[in-house]
Image (cartoon, rainbow, N blue to C red; front, side, top):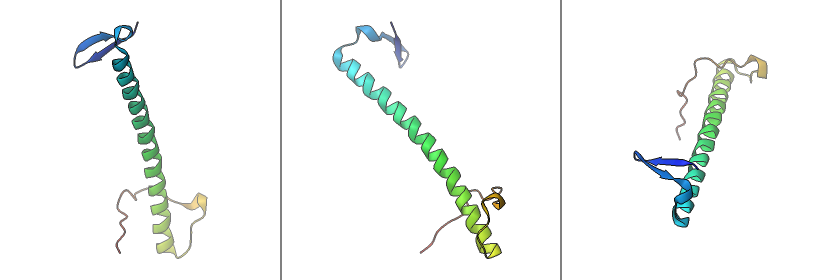
Length: 83
């Protein structure tokens, strides 16, 4: 028997109606997708920072850095694109 707490009120998951169980399943799915997307966003942000630093070094040095030469310190979110 699993207990679900919503707004401080406890519910026995086995006694839920079919409709409530369906809503609970949907809520669990959405929560897991949000967690997955947040992890993906974090990975993409890390990649963006690395690409920005590589671009900065290329612009300053006039050549693309070797993979083991890229400095990943201090770039942050300061790279902006303007048309």
